[in-house]
Amino acid sequence: MRARPRRLAGSGGGMAAAGGEGMRTEQEPDSDGGSEELVLTPAQLIRSLEQAWLNEKFAPELLESKPEIIECVVEQLDHMDANLKRAKKGDLKVSVHHMEIERIRYVLSSYLRCRLVKIEKFFPHVLEKEKSRAEGEPSILSPEEFAFAKEYMANTETYLKNVALKHMPPNLQKVSLLKSVPKPNLDSFVFLRVLERQENILVEPETDEQREYTIDLEEGSQHLIRYKTIAPLVASGAVQLI
Amino acid sequence: MDPAAGSGTLWAGLRRRSANGEGGRGTRRVRVRCRRGPPGCRAPGTMEPAEAEFLAEKELVTIVPNFSLDRIHLIGGDLGPFNPGLPVEVPVWLAINLKQRQKCRLIPPEWMDVEKLEEIRDQERKEDTFTPMPSPYYMELTKLLLNYASDNIPKADEIRTLVKDTWDTRIAKLRLSADSFVKQQEAHAKLDNLTLMEINTIGTFLTQALDHMYKLRTNLQPGESAQSQDF
Image (cartoon, rainbow over all chains, first blue to last red; front, side, top):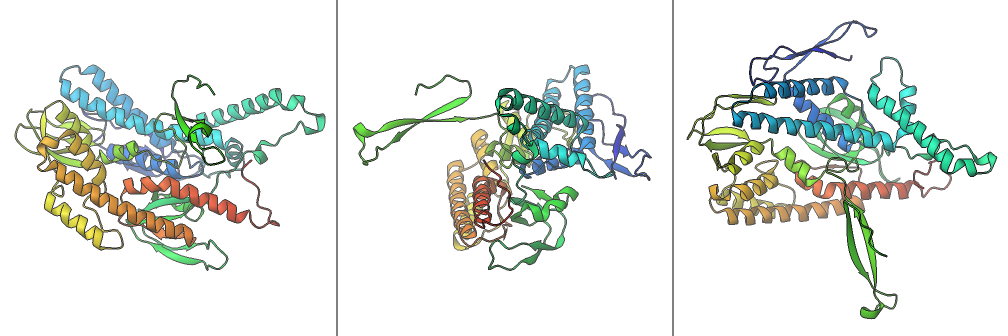
């Protein structure tokens, strides 16, 4: 169920952040049916932005896009910026707020930059996955990222054709980018911290002599394991990559 | 082999011995070029020490301000009010900044004390496994607080040495266990009491080494339809 941000709750005057009251995110009654309200305080919003940032940093593949978090964070930052512009007095308060804005902005741009690096690295697979996504499944690309990926693919194809393929013999002029660009390696190892207790996670054997076995993930523990086994847990937020 | 000028490129000169193993005349200079991007946009799967420090800066620490200010409503939470002489808790990034502007005095966290750290260091040396650390960011906090507020912390040098000793012991243990992990080709490891900085120190190398070994192993079987991933 996707929650879409509607509007931010009104702010207090002066320097108050737009919250203290929670932010309401409602779902539109669209094809998903039903409606769900998710109330996040700004502190929780920043916390989930940082979680998304760390997950994206350490996951070998491109994770789900989180448009609602990004939109809300941008709204908060813009709101605080507008507040700061209005109130010129109180040098210390202004600089403290400014510092916090810079910190949040750093996390946000690092997150978006990380996603762009992955899109550029795996562009045919990302587009393929997006094309073959079922209705109602969450998208891994935001609309802007999708446009970027398509443009990037078109540009790469044109460049390859003009620089190399045009000059090849006619039967060698086709290159399938999907086959030539390396896929993300889902078997890489990742470090994770457990947020919600999980039972019976299957650990596949490395060598032929080993058996597979199951482990339980205690809350608060840290592990080193292959990404493939725990990928659904990352998507659901039960573990955090570190 | 002239070095090309380029902003952001770092040239390292390596001296390579000639084939017959002699130094001196036979050596040749090999220039290695490594390009560093701005932090935050390196290859996914890595974390800079600066970024671990960034996360550590969110920890709360007590300060005694010498100014007064009413409550600040930050996006991440409320702080204050600030009254001269009364201790208040703020995140480390703010504490360091206020200290640099000489607006406050820092109070070291209660674990940053010579006896406690000696105990921790001895405990760490005794045990084979990792002991829990007083703070998940002990290394970063020590570095930050001792760099910017060493005048507020009694016996700062001793504390620095003690923390470094503990760190060295833990890294040595980590290296040993990473070594045995790779040798025995295990599939899973539990590393509960490791802090983020320690994981980062060895994390990238370890995961990349494991990836390489996995690729080598899966490409051993010839008849498999495993697609070659690299050119």
